[in-house]
Image (cartoon, rainbow, N blue to C red):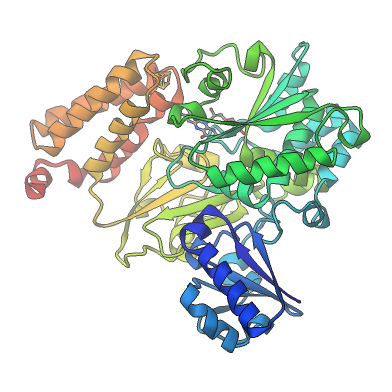
Length: 516
Ligand SMILES: Cc1cc2nc3c(=O)[nH]c(=O)nc-3n(C[C@H](O)[C@H](O)[C@H](O)COP(=O)(O)O)c2cc1C
Ligand code: SF4
């Protein structure tokens, strides 16, 4: 029986993967060909979805961008034995987009049946958790510290230090909270993991629980991810049934269980303290710090809040050692980062690599430049609050410090590419509008400042007293940057100021008149 793999990742579904799977099953039956269709997560090559892979003695042979109307000709070409066809891409793992990656976090995604415990275990699953149980909390935290892992949710805080703070805080109960709100524009890595390798997240959270002595975990997932919710819920039930979760995980004496909670759709609920408010059933409003969530978090107990990608890096770190993980990367950015390449880009998708590639390599070599074929004008890195970098910054290595030195951020690893038709003054206005819409309203610089920011940007775009209004928006940005309570108001000036600094011609009175 030939095994055929087709992704059921949301991106693949949106591009017609279900129709292709149904057609392949029907065609095989009509032709009397024995096949088994396995629905996987995505390999991350979104530009090739729906990707159909066939297991052959030489490995998995891929057929990209398959339509239901291609299926009959695929059978005629003998694709079930890896036969040649116009949609053929050869061995999937030899594809240049895939072969250049270092897949640690996404090692299994796109390969396994996401809810098969056997598949998970066959590719190193649960080995990290077993080791954590064996070496105990202090050595587990030491291993995480040694790996140099920094939070992948945006702030880049060292995970080992966070865990130690929680473990050391005296308390009757501690919590693990996974931040799966994934609000940044152009990001989809958390979703891909939860749809394609959910046991990895469960294992990462269970290791965190063993390390800090937590008995309960929550995953806070955005409501816009129904497929991820379904797959993750199914994985939770299977893991519970097999005693990877429950009152005595793997017979270790540790009790730990996880609950999935769905957010109601606010960007600010990705900020850890408003996420905790929301989990507690309140309105998602930012809490003043201190106290840190590590001291007083969910229900006032010490709480680890970590992003999906931070937690999914953990099983590898425990299994292969902190030193192994720290062996990848540059400077203080250790390990790998799943880059999410989106926007106007030829080869869009997820590319996991060690820190240190330059922005130019990512956009031009890996991403293949713009989908429109026009020159790249700007790349926004790090979500809606990230700076716009011009091609002159393409020599910037993908590294927390290198981006910060150029007033940018890498955030959750999202890169949104724009061609030369983009109007940067409008993008600056959008940053202020986004902040105004998403502001939780707790502090004045953000609540009022963002609304005033939209008005000032509209005057600049309309050509009204441009120089005066540019000075005003710069001043307002300084107030928001230094006076806001959290990074929503504090970072919104980054896209605005970077647009002004790197694309001043879009803000000139002449440009405003030409745009009329
Ligand atoms: C406005 C705002 C939105 C955020 N959204 C997210 C998010 O969607 N996912 C996430 O993991 N972190 C988000 N963060 C960062 C979290 O506050 C927090 O730093 C993170 O969850 C900690 O996990 P980590 O150390 O693993 O990165 C956001 C922060 C701010 C200020
Ligand atoms: S900066 Fe904005 S989102 Fe953050 S606390 Fe202030 S009002 Fe709320």
